[in-house]
Image 1: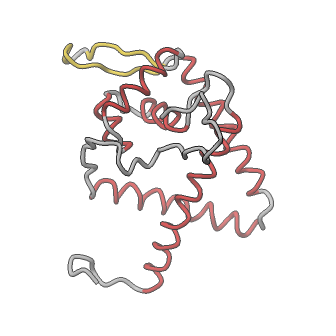
Image 2: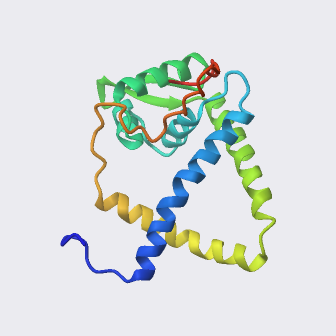
Image 3: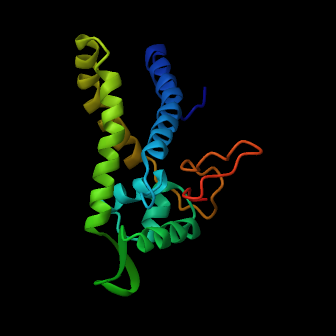
Length: 186
C-alpha cells in the first residue's frame, strides 16, 4: 500500500472499489439513454453536463474545461454548437471584458430539464422494482455519498486539461462498418 494512503479497513476498500466499478457503467447507461431520447437539436451527453455546470455557476470556458477534464478547444467547439442551437450565449464578463462568461438560455434550461427528467424517469422505473427497504437504504446513503464526493473534490484539485486524452465524456466510436450519428459531438 502507498505510504501516503492511511491504512483503511477492508470494508471501506471493498466499498470504494465497488463504487469505482459501478460509476463508469452508470455513466455509460446514462449516455446511452440520453442518446436514445434525443431529438434533433437536443444537447449531447457532454453538452448536458455543460448545461448543468453552467446552471450551477461554472461560467467560463476555462472552468468548464477544467471541471470536465477536457481541452479548452473541445469546450469551444461544444459551446459553438450549443450557441448555434440557442442553448447558451457568450457574454463579456462584467468584471473583466477580455474574458467571456457563458449564460444558459431559457431553451437551454428547458432542454436540460426535459432530458434530465427523461433519464431520471427511466432510472425511477428501474428503482421502483426494488424492495422498499433497499430504496430506504439508498436514500440514506446518498447524502453520505454526496458529502464524500464533495470532500474529495475539495481535497483534490482538478488540473487544467490541455488535451482530450482520457476524456471521461467521450462518446463511444461506432462499430466498424456502421456510420456515426451525425448529431454526436466528436
